[in-house]
Image (cartoon, rainbow, N blue to C red):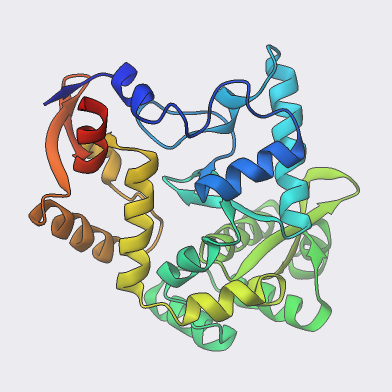
Length: 276
């Protein structure tokens, strides 16, 4: 089977149509309908992305809209914002957030989760200080964390930024707002405090089940994808991801094909619907 990008666009034409988003409410409705999507620019053959759906001809307006919307959606707990699909900024609905949390392997017990990450070498030591500071003082901005947890040198600030990155990626902390209206200066909170329902629900979902359900949803949104695009699709649970993809291949749900002449896989149900 051979597919082009035009074929892929046709398969998912109704998911996120052009000119269908021009307000915060439209944006939220798209996130809740799809479950998760990229917040900004698209990449060929991957998730639907907001930029191509915005009803404007101005790139400046696109950036202004989405940059503001993702901050409001996150701050008001209407949707989660993070780099959880292929390392690109992603908006996730409240319904689907527990599955992403489940895939991290977190238990909801911060000390146990921190210990696990430290033993695996996945977070810098300064990350522990960040978590304990947030536990004691509550939501705190990046500038305050720099003042309280670094000595002001470039090296220590870089270390703090690395700690924030790893903790954010591990869903132990979360961006909960912005300092002084500056969306680059984040306010951080503990994930367990900010999204308690997602923690409770996600902690009860087996990792294998989370991987299976997220992959099925991903292939609904992206029916054909090049083989290399499956590498590190989600930032956690790569072993489970590979097992689930192998299972879907064995079951015949995923079939080998080519996209723009390169090795790819296709979701059989979407292909059959497209050809009928």
